[in-house]
Length: 374
Image (cartoon, rainbow, N blue to C red; front, side, top):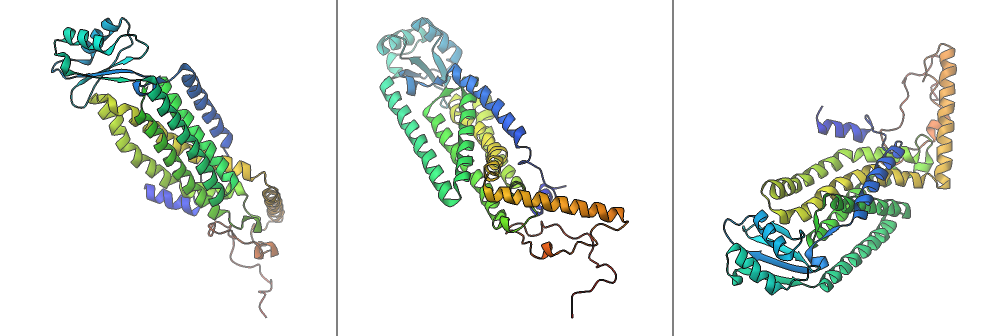
């Protein structure tokens, strides 16, 4: 069966995965992942030179490997803290933390002598910790402003419950991504911050698409008694499921190439900072929009008085139909023969749920029953 076929069947309601009904399972999985991420975050992030301050030395020498440069730099500073990477141009980049009390001129002189190059061939750049602190504050301010604007937009465009669910999903994605960064020990650079903000935008976009379908499916929901809010929301989620999967896969392909081929096989370490953030964030964003945001929205919505009353009516109707079916079966009648009730006539189907209303099992009326025409 093709993916297109599955998508059509999901949209029509012929096939359905109960994401909303199994929300406790998704909540448990998310809690475990966030807990592991929190442990990694408690261990501390590996901040780049731009945030903690220090010196960066870039040298071009054919044949100089990163391991040789690190061994030499560690001997000069007297500790195993130097961070060495190779750039896309084949240069070697050595980072020395501001905690190492060695002047840049001293390091440049000793390093040039050790590797056999001229001092002027080494480009030294000193970054003060105050600059990194300023960048950190601006990044945090931007994140807070983004969260506030998202909450206001969702509350106006949809409703406050959707705003809360979307905000929880964003925080969920951010915690997971930062936690993974801490666990793998990747360096946090300004590129990483750009990656964080990018994944938040993607996660929000995916959530808004799902919520828009849910909003359409639940319009006028209280006028009927066949489906609860959770069931209607789950149907909307299934309608956009294939689209969400396709979008995520297409987005992950180039990011995977950057992370595993560019950063892994080709050794372009400068690509790792942003590509890892995008890879983890895109995957977490797709998961949260399906398994966190929508189930949480349905849970919040089911607490509303009108939705509680709707759930009660749905339960009563189903119990009545089950009782009628059991009595008909006991009399030897085919269930559905007496399905034309007054309740059916006044039961409207909400927008977006056309075709989902339960159909009578028999189109023929019982023998001897009046047709209703005069």
